[in-house]
Length: 209
Ligand code: MN3
Image (cartoon, rainbow, N blue to C red):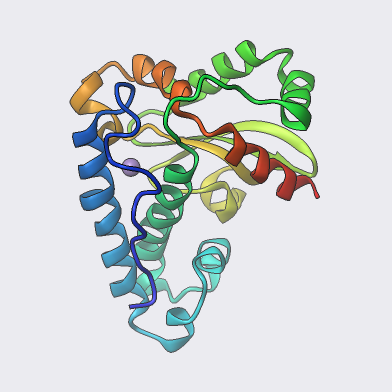
């Protein structure tokens, strides 16, 4: 199978009390695993697709055979988004962004608090299931959101936005419902406690290099 589910980079209980253990187990072990299994089924039809890296699959959806394009969009997007998401989180450390990333956030949004507020608003404004993202486009930070498992890398024509994601939050109910029920706003506020700012800084550096 060309695509595999990597283990979580920390224990399932490592993000407590902000993200509960059971949510992490089901989210990774069931939801993400299903995206991987269905992506493998979708690419099984041709050798070209089977050997194509995940990044290329989602950046180049237009060239996928129409019969499997939707399945690759949903499940390739799901696999990419969740693989990214797990690494964007870490056990609560109490540290925020610093250095060039903090300077860029301040320049683009005024200060960290107003960046966070606008990011939460993007997550709240996504009707139904999807993601909110912080992206870099030609050196510029932007907040966008996508539906379902779409990703800015899929491009404007498909995802409605573009840019390179450096931070993203899953606002599907499966990401928070067990602990927060319908309170998406509370989940989004709590989520900042487990953001791995070192990972975000690495993504920012790579996207602005
Ligand atoms: Mn999810």
